Image 1 (spheres, rainbow over the protein chains, first blue to last red):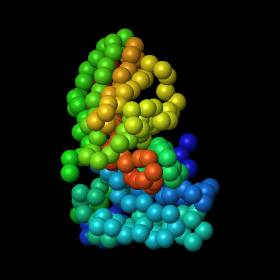
Image 2 (cartoon, helix red, strand yellow):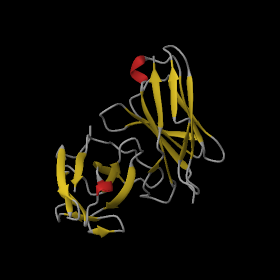
Image 3 (cartoon, rainbow over the protein chains, first blue to last red):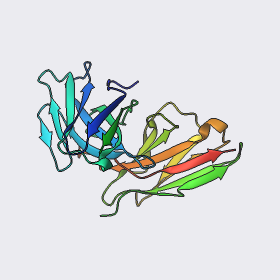
Length: 113
Length: 115
């Protein structure tokens, strides 16, 4: 079972910031938080990941609380093309092999004009 | 850099038949994972291959099998197809081994329909 809890759906106005929450209260010390999104009829797209520090890249920012029990993905200026299902995933950091991803149902983000 | 490519994009089979799906990993990646995504659900892990060996398997029966080749491309084979095997099959590649914590990058999948 997925180890994360996300709202089923969210709306966001075009041009505004989209803040997608995720709860992962049972996360362990060596597990990372990963975010992917899936636009209709495409494969999941990697967005960002982090352990305990906040992270930013060209797509988004990831804010992880100090106790690591929750996180927020921020899309700073949402566009219509950001409409997708967003998955928050907790993943073990494997050294000698790569852990699989356990997907939940994600959050359906609808960006509206 | 070339991303993950999967073939074919769509496929129709009948119950009892066998199918082979193919995946070319992203340049420089040595690990391939396969996922099944039923309509309206998140992807479910089938298995992973690292350096041509199976390296982890999800809750799928033995009629789901795979191969990884020396160039790190991969195949997913499904025997004795059932109606419930209708799904989007996704392949993801990553850099495994001693390079830890590398994200998986997905192809756009093969849509398999069983009649």
